[in-house]
Image (cartoon, rainbow, N blue to C red; front, side, top):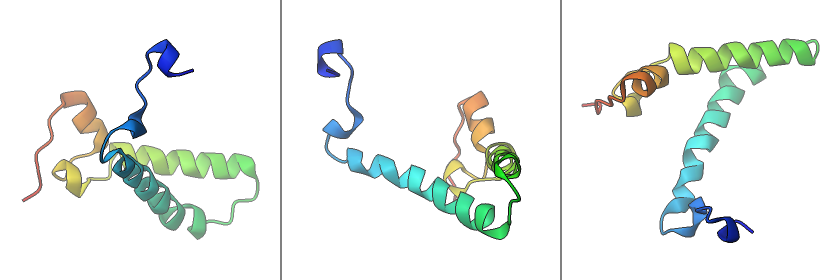
Amino acid sequence: MLKEQDVRISMDGKGRCVDNIFVERLWRSLKYEEVYLNAYGDVRQAWAGVGRWLRFYNLERPHQALGYRTPMHVYRTGIIEQAA
C-alpha cells in the first residue's frame, strides 16, 4: 500500500535500523529521569509531568550530540556544532 502511494519506507535502506536508537534513547531518558522518579496520582498528573519533562528536554537540556545545544535551538537555527 505504501509503495502504491509512492511513500518511502525508512527501514528499506542499509543502516536504517539505527534510526530506532534515537527514539529508544529518548524513552530511556524519559523513564529514568521522570516516570520512575514520580508516583503520579492519576493520568492527568502523569500527562503533566511527562509534558514538563519533554519541554525541558527540548528547550533547556543541552545535548552532547548537538554540540551542547538544545534540540529547539538546532531546529530553529539549523546549526549543529559538533562537540569537541
